[in-house]
Structures are given as structure tokens and as C-alpha cells.
Length: 117
Image (cartoon, rainbow, N blue to C red; front, side):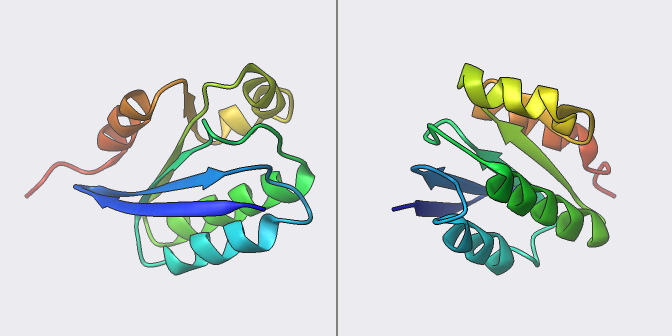
């Protein structure tokens, strides 16, 4: 079972999945990302995801595409070595910022945002 927590922080939406992110649970994650389609800046915290397969990776890529189509960006916080290795091996970390902590990911998103006018 996957639980997804969504919080709205100043400047971005924070999406935190809890549990395995795989073909059996990915629909809940996609649904949460879909509910955030209006958000330009999205931070996804994978620190409570012990396992992710290609379905989870595909959902992440879909969330990135939607944010970028809206003129925004995505950053990922991931403190789990196995997931970090997966994101590195697949080249995902070349597409979006992948950091170890939420605060580092928030800083990366702040850099991606245009300065206030």
C-alpha cells in the first residue's frame, strides 16, 4: 500500500510517497501528481520509499513533463542509496536535480525560479 502526502510550501508543492512505488501502487502516485498539475514547482521526497521500479520511474518522468510544460521544474530529495543509484544509473539525475535532503532540493527549486519582479 502506498500513501502519498501533499503539502503546499511557499514557492512549491511537496509530494511525499510512503511505501513501495511499483506497478501495483503507482496509480496512487500518478493520481497525486495529477492533482498537482497546476503547480509549476514540485519537490518529490522519496526518503520514505524503500523500493521503486520502472513504473514509479515512469510516473516521476510524467510529473516532470507536466511541470516543465507549465513553465516550472521539479527537484527530487532521495536519501536512500539504492534509489539514488537507480536514479543515477537511468540518467534521471541528469534531467532533474536529485539531492539527499528536502532542504537541498528546495534550494535547487529556488534557483530554478525566476526572480520576483
